[in-house]
Image (cartoon, rainbow, N blue to C red; front, top):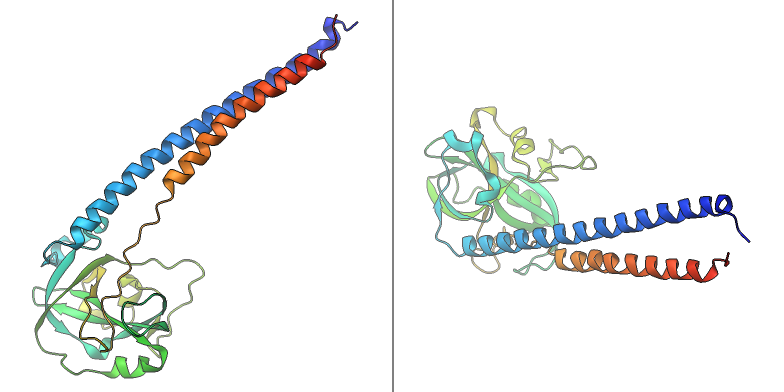
Length: 255
Protein backbone atom coordinates (compact mmCIF):
# COMPACT_ATOMS: atom_id res chain seq x y z
CA UNK A 1 0.00 0.00 0.00
CA UNK A 2 1.52 3.36 -1.11
CA UNK A 3 1.10 6.44 1.03
CA UNK A 4 0.30 9.94 -0.29
CA UNK A 5 3.78 11.07 0.82
CA UNK A 6 5.42 8.35 -1.26
CA UNK A 7 3.28 9.18 -4.30
CA UNK A 8 4.02 12.94 -4.14
CA UNK A 9 7.49 12.95 -5.84
CA UNK A 10 6.17 10.80 -8.68
CA UNK A 11 3.16 13.07 -9.14
CA UNK A 12 5.42 16.14 -9.27
CA UNK A 13 7.67 14.55 -11.89
CA UNK A 14 4.62 13.51 -13.91
CA UNK A 15 3.30 17.06 -13.79
CA UNK A 16 6.64 18.50 -14.93
CA UNK A 17 6.83 16.02 -17.79
CA UNK A 18 3.27 16.81 -18.91
CA UNK A 19 4.00 20.56 -18.90
CA UNK A 20 7.21 20.06 -20.88
CA UNK A 21 5.49 17.91 -23.50
CA UNK A 22 2.61 20.36 -23.87
CA UNK A 23 5.12 23.20 -24.17
CA UNK A 24 7.01 21.22 -26.81
CA UNK A 25 3.78 20.69 -28.72
CA UNK A 26 2.98 24.41 -28.63
CA UNK A 27 6.52 25.27 -29.76
CA UNK A 28 6.33 22.85 -32.69
CA UNK A 29 2.97 24.29 -33.74
CA UNK A 30 4.42 27.81 -33.62
CA UNK A 31 7.48 26.79 -35.65
CA UNK A 32 5.33 25.06 -38.25
CA UNK A 33 3.12 28.14 -38.59
CA UNK A 34 6.19 30.38 -38.84
CA UNK A 35 7.52 28.21 -41.66
CA UNK A 36 4.19 28.55 -43.48
CA UNK A 37 4.50 32.34 -43.20
CA UNK A 38 8.04 32.12 -44.55
CA UNK A 39 6.75 29.94 -47.40
CA UNK A 40 4.24 32.62 -48.38
CA UNK A 41 6.95 35.30 -48.26
CA UNK A 42 9.36 33.20 -50.34
CA UNK A 43 6.72 32.41 -52.96
CA UNK A 44 5.85 36.12 -53.20
CA UNK A 45 9.55 36.94 -53.61
CA UNK A 46 9.99 34.33 -56.35
CA UNK A 47 6.94 35.64 -58.20
CA UNK A 48 8.19 39.22 -57.92
CA UNK A 49 11.66 38.31 -59.19
CA UNK A 50 10.19 36.27 -62.05
CA UNK A 51 8.11 39.26 -63.15
CA UNK A 52 11.11 41.56 -62.71
CA UNK A 53 13.38 39.37 -64.85
CA UNK A 54 11.03 39.67 -67.82
CA UNK A 55 10.55 43.43 -67.55
CA UNK A 56 12.19 45.99 -69.82
CA UNK A 57 15.54 47.45 -68.69
CA UNK A 58 15.29 50.68 -66.74
CA UNK A 59 18.06 53.26 -66.24
CA UNK A 60 20.30 52.46 -63.31
CA UNK A 61 19.55 54.75 -60.33
CA UNK A 62 21.72 57.91 -60.21
CA UNK A 63 24.58 58.19 -57.75
CA UNK A 64 22.66 60.64 -55.56
CA UNK A 65 20.22 57.86 -54.58
CA UNK A 66 22.77 55.15 -53.75
CA UNK A 67 23.23 55.95 -50.06
CA UNK A 68 19.58 55.22 -49.18
CA UNK A 69 18.89 52.62 -51.83
CA UNK A 70 16.80 49.44 -51.30
CA UNK A 71 19.11 46.94 -52.98
CA UNK A 72 16.88 43.90 -52.52
CA UNK A 73 13.92 45.64 -54.15
CA UNK A 74 16.02 45.93 -57.33
CA UNK A 75 17.65 42.49 -57.23
CA UNK A 76 17.58 40.88 -60.73
CA UNK A 77 16.04 44.01 -62.27
CA UNK A 78 17.22 44.50 -65.88
CA UNK A 79 18.97 47.86 -66.07
CA UNK A 80 20.67 50.00 -68.71
CA UNK A 81 23.84 52.04 -68.18
CA UNK A 82 25.49 54.63 -70.37
CA UNK A 83 29.12 55.47 -69.79
CA UNK A 84 32.67 54.21 -70.29
CA UNK A 85 34.51 51.05 -69.28
CA UNK A 86 37.95 51.45 -67.68
CA UNK A 87 39.72 48.23 -68.74
CA UNK A 88 42.99 49.08 -67.01
CA UNK A 89 41.14 48.82 -63.67
CA UNK A 90 39.65 45.35 -64.29
CA UNK A 91 39.54 42.94 -61.36
CA UNK A 92 39.20 39.15 -61.66
CA UNK A 93 36.97 37.47 -59.06
CA UNK A 94 37.61 33.77 -58.52
CA UNK A 95 34.69 31.39 -58.92
CA UNK A 96 33.82 27.86 -59.96
CA UNK A 97 31.05 27.84 -62.52
CA UNK A 98 28.85 24.75 -62.34
CA UNK A 99 26.03 24.08 -64.80
CA UNK A 100 27.11 26.90 -67.15
CA UNK A 101 24.76 28.11 -69.86
CA UNK A 102 27.68 28.66 -72.22
CA UNK A 103 30.47 26.27 -73.23
CA UNK A 104 32.98 27.43 -70.58
CA UNK A 105 32.74 26.26 -66.98
CA UNK A 106 34.64 24.93 -63.98
CA UNK A 107 37.26 26.92 -62.05
CA UNK A 108 37.78 30.40 -63.41
CA UNK A 109 37.08 34.09 -62.86
CA UNK A 110 34.42 36.73 -63.22
CA UNK A 111 35.89 39.65 -65.16
CA UNK A 112 34.70 42.77 -63.34
CA UNK A 113 35.42 46.20 -64.84
CA UNK A 114 34.56 49.67 -63.50
CA UNK A 115 32.01 51.49 -65.64
CA UNK A 116 31.97 55.27 -65.25
CA UNK A 117 28.44 56.59 -65.75
CA UNK A 118 27.96 59.66 -67.92
CA UNK A 119 25.80 61.07 -65.11
CA UNK A 120 28.53 60.53 -62.48
CA UNK A 121 29.61 57.69 -60.26
CA UNK A 122 31.01 54.26 -61.05
CA UNK A 123 29.33 50.86 -61.25
CA UNK A 124 31.25 47.59 -61.30
CA UNK A 125 30.12 45.49 -64.26
CA UNK A 126 30.61 41.75 -64.31
CA UNK A 127 31.36 41.16 -67.97
CA UNK A 128 31.22 37.39 -67.58
CA UNK A 129 33.20 34.23 -66.89
CA UNK A 130 36.56 33.05 -68.23
CA UNK A 131 38.41 29.80 -67.45
CA UNK A 132 41.52 30.06 -65.27
CA UNK A 133 44.01 30.06 -68.15
CA UNK A 134 42.39 33.11 -69.76
CA UNK A 135 42.37 35.40 -66.72
CA UNK A 136 45.41 37.52 -67.54
CA UNK A 137 44.42 37.93 -71.18
CA UNK A 138 40.89 38.95 -70.20
CA UNK A 139 42.18 41.49 -67.69
CA UNK A 140 44.54 42.99 -70.28
CA UNK A 141 41.97 43.04 -73.10
CA UNK A 142 40.88 46.60 -73.91
CA UNK A 143 39.32 46.03 -77.33
CA UNK A 144 36.16 48.10 -77.77
CA UNK A 145 36.58 49.79 -74.41
CA UNK A 146 37.36 53.30 -73.32
CA UNK A 147 34.59 54.80 -75.48
CA UNK A 148 31.06 55.77 -74.44
CA UNK A 149 28.60 52.90 -74.74
CA UNK A 150 25.17 51.84 -73.49
CA UNK A 151 24.93 48.37 -71.99
CA UNK A 152 22.24 46.30 -70.30
CA UNK A 153 22.43 43.73 -67.55
CA UNK A 154 20.95 42.51 -64.30
CA UNK A 155 21.14 44.57 -61.12
CA UNK A 156 22.76 42.61 -58.26
CA UNK A 157 23.36 43.57 -54.61
CA UNK A 158 26.98 43.20 -53.60
CA UNK A 159 28.19 39.94 -52.10
CA UNK A 160 29.53 40.01 -48.55
CA UNK A 161 32.78 38.36 -47.59
CA UNK A 162 32.59 35.83 -44.77
CA UNK A 163 35.31 35.56 -42.15
CA UNK A 164 36.95 32.68 -44.06
CA UNK A 165 37.34 34.70 -47.28
CA UNK A 166 41.01 35.59 -47.89
CA UNK A 167 42.24 39.09 -48.51
CA UNK A 168 42.47 40.14 -52.17
CA UNK A 169 45.62 39.59 -54.20
CA UNK A 170 46.26 43.23 -55.09
CA UNK A 171 49.39 42.52 -57.16
CA UNK A 172 47.41 40.27 -59.55
CA UNK A 173 44.16 42.22 -59.11
CA UNK A 174 42.34 39.08 -57.98
CA UNK A 175 39.40 39.05 -55.58
CA UNK A 176 37.23 36.31 -54.07
CA UNK A 177 33.81 37.99 -53.79
CA UNK A 178 31.87 40.51 -55.85
CA UNK A 179 31.75 43.02 -53.03
CA UNK A 180 31.78 46.58 -54.41
CA UNK A 181 33.33 47.91 -51.21
CA UNK A 182 36.27 45.52 -51.44
CA UNK A 183 36.55 46.01 -55.20
CA UNK A 184 36.64 49.78 -54.71
CA UNK A 185 39.84 49.41 -52.68
CA UNK A 186 41.56 48.03 -55.82
CA UNK A 187 40.71 50.86 -58.22
CA UNK A 188 41.52 54.55 -58.55
CA UNK A 189 39.93 56.49 -55.63
CA UNK A 190 38.92 59.21 -58.09
CA UNK A 191 36.25 56.86 -59.43
CA UNK A 192 34.16 57.50 -56.31
CA UNK A 193 31.32 57.35 -55.63
CA UNK A 194 31.20 53.60 -56.18
CA UNK A 195 27.78 51.96 -56.41
CA UNK A 196 26.90 49.49 -53.59
CA UNK A 197 25.72 47.08 -56.28
CA UNK A 198 27.11 45.57 -59.45
CA UNK A 199 25.62 44.61 -62.81
CA UNK A 200 25.82 41.21 -64.53
CA UNK A 201 26.05 41.58 -68.30
CA UNK A 202 23.84 39.48 -70.55
CA UNK A 203 25.20 36.74 -72.79
CA UNK A 204 27.06 37.84 -75.91
CA UNK A 205 27.74 35.91 -79.08
CA UNK A 206 28.07 32.13 -78.49
CA UNK A 207 31.63 31.11 -77.70
CA UNK A 208 32.89 34.61 -76.87
CA UNK A 209 34.77 35.38 -73.68
CA UNK A 210 34.07 36.72 -71.13
CA UNK A 211 30.97 34.51 -71.11
CA UNK A 212 28.04 36.61 -69.92
CA UNK A 213 24.53 35.58 -69.05
CA UNK A 214 25.60 33.29 -66.22
CA UNK A 215 23.58 34.93 -63.44
CA UNK A 216 22.20 32.28 -61.09
CA UNK A 217 18.57 33.01 -60.23
CA UNK A 218 17.82 30.60 -57.43
CA UNK A 219 15.94 30.82 -54.14
CA UNK A 220 16.07 27.72 -51.92
CA UNK A 221 12.50 27.04 -50.82
CA UNK A 222 12.27 24.21 -48.28
CA UNK A 223 9.79 25.92 -45.96
CA UNK A 224 6.88 23.58 -46.74
CA UNK A 225 8.95 20.53 -45.85
CA UNK A 226 10.12 22.20 -42.64
CA UNK A 227 6.51 23.09 -41.77
CA UNK A 228 5.38 19.48 -42.26
CA UNK A 229 8.24 18.34 -40.03
CA UNK A 230 7.32 20.69 -37.19
CA UNK A 231 3.61 19.90 -37.48
CA UNK A 232 4.53 16.20 -37.42
CA UNK A 233 6.41 16.72 -34.16
CA UNK A 234 3.39 18.62 -32.82
CA UNK A 235 1.27 15.53 -33.48
CA UNK A 236 3.77 12.99 -32.20
CA UNK A 237 4.48 14.78 -28.90
CA UNK A 238 0.93 14.62 -27.44
CA UNK A 239 0.48 11.06 -28.75
CA UNK A 240 3.63 10.02 -26.91
CA UNK A 241 2.42 11.87 -23.81
CA UNK A 242 -0.93 10.08 -23.80
CA UNK A 243 0.80 6.73 -24.33
CA UNK A 244 3.20 7.42 -21.49
CA UNK A 245 0.39 8.51 -19.12
CA UNK A 246 -1.57 5.38 -20.02
CA UNK A 247 1.43 3.17 -19.29
CA UNK A 248 2.00 4.94 -15.97
CA UNK A 249 -1.63 4.45 -15.05
CA UNK A 250 -1.44 0.73 -15.78
CA UNK A 251 1.72 0.37 -13.69
CA UNK A 252 0.38 2.31 -10.73
CA UNK A 253 -0.20 0.00 -7.76
CA UNK A 254 -3.68 -0.05 -6.38
CA UNK A 255 -4.22 1.50 -2.97
